Image 1 (cartoon, rainbow, N blue to C red):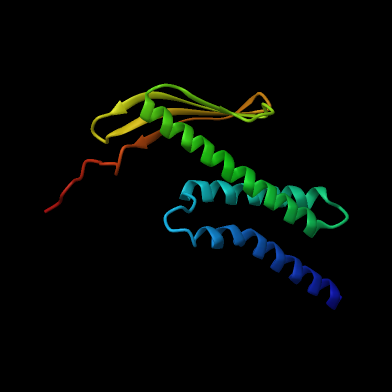
Image 2: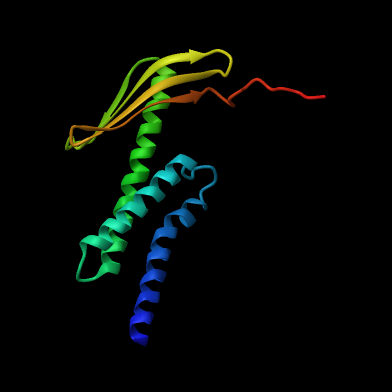
Length: 155
């Protein structure tokens, strides 16, 4: 019984160490770390991948969770970063931008929709396909600098 708890503790420690290593290493580079959205995408991918790996690997659930978490984190962060890059390029160039993986598994399209003079933000429609299926379709704002909003002052 004691060995089972020790094994679970070691597995959790290894999972936490491997999951936090990229964040620690990226914090060493000045100003080149991942964006908050990329970090959130990686975290969501890691969580989903860990659960999937835990359920799939019946022989060693810790191994499944670790591998699934690592793969999910990389995939989630990469997809988020690529979709953000496509949106920024579409807003800056005023034309649709498409990124597709070499194997055709994943495709990201970003098309400019409009510009809001008041907030100085471009609206961009972002669509993501996986295996030919649309998995994300949203309109997001890409701002030139800081987004400005009307302020109300109370006296």
